[in-house]
Length: 166
Image (cartoon, rainbow, N blue to C red; front, side, top):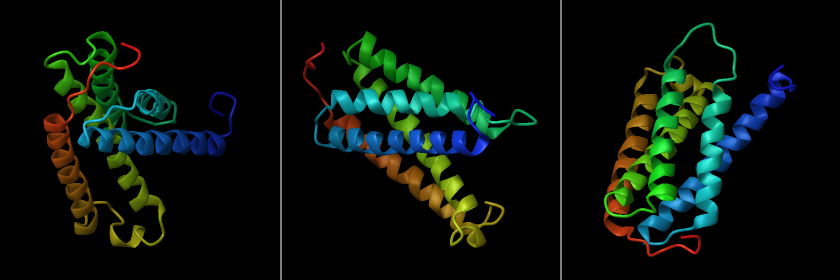
């Protein structure tokens, strides 16, 4: 039991929160490419992505490992994005700091989604049973390359005016 939920139920809730974070983050990121901000979806993206990282630490683990490191890194970049957006209101260099940090947090969630897909989906699992095989590595390199390009383009294109809440 985790937080009064069975492991299965907790896992389902964690996955749903993660997917909400990924989908809302993708919409926010594509908005940046068009120079638009979406304050409501941004709050949803940041909140669910923080919650994804925090709830990830509640799963039982015999030792500290890569998932914990990724969770810590995600929380660090999320803190940077939140500070850049809500404390410094994207002024000056805080604009690109926000984009880079938020895009990295989204990338980390997508990275984990790819890992989970290769572990759990029956049609992908045989392609990379140990996750060191070429299909897995190609998928992760492609995801990284996509995020580097989208992040670079977002930094160039996203120059928001003041939000309604500023």
